[in-house]
Image 1 (cartoon, rainbow, N blue to C red):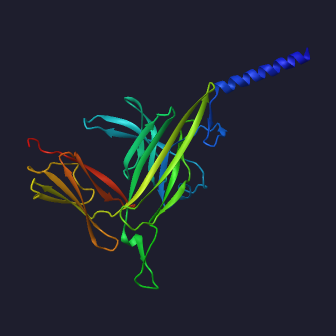
Image 2: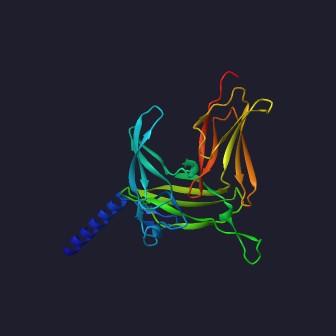
Length: 321
């Protein structure tokens, strides 16, 4: 009788364990190891010249949680909407991660980002049955002579490149409770001395969720490119007629272009000149051409932290010709 009860008890335990395993959810990392960690990679937080932990007195690798901040967004029609963004208190940096926004029109996924992140892009690939989300963005950093080169005292005239900045690409996660945090990531030194030099860093994560004896794989990747440019000193907009003759010339300080421009009557195309200075102190001009197929123009301006942001200006072409 005792042995029969013992066998029944063992069978009941096995059945209960089976139910727990069938109803539970486990994650498998890319290396095949199973873990119950529900944290998900959602993007990065980029700091310059300092790990986020050391910047505010945390131990290396210690979690720094983000604080939700509710901001008002005013649309063109004057309608005011509230949306939640996230900030890491006491820490300066460039956020670039995805969060779920809940607003007047329901829930949606959007970026928590900074104006220094340009050319943002999000792609969702489910072609092989496994969903993968990829986000990409570019940071432009100002290339300046006094930061890019230094004089060697033993020769008096040789020039040696020196690192401008170290960019720490710190991963951002969302835990099972919905809280968002970042931890210290790897640093990359920018020591380029030529405009257009670029490097990138990609973080990826693949997880497998097992439910009811079925596996579902999902992936996430974030790619950040960092490109050096010469910051403009001033910007010239030239309105050209069909015979390539200038109709008008207007000059602007970087970042001070109007939100919209109305080309002069008879304008066939526009030339936008960015007047810069090389690290040797020589004048450099880069030109971009825009015609009636273009609805906007883009120009750069430098921030105090040495990052360059894009300003987008709408083009309101005259009708009737």
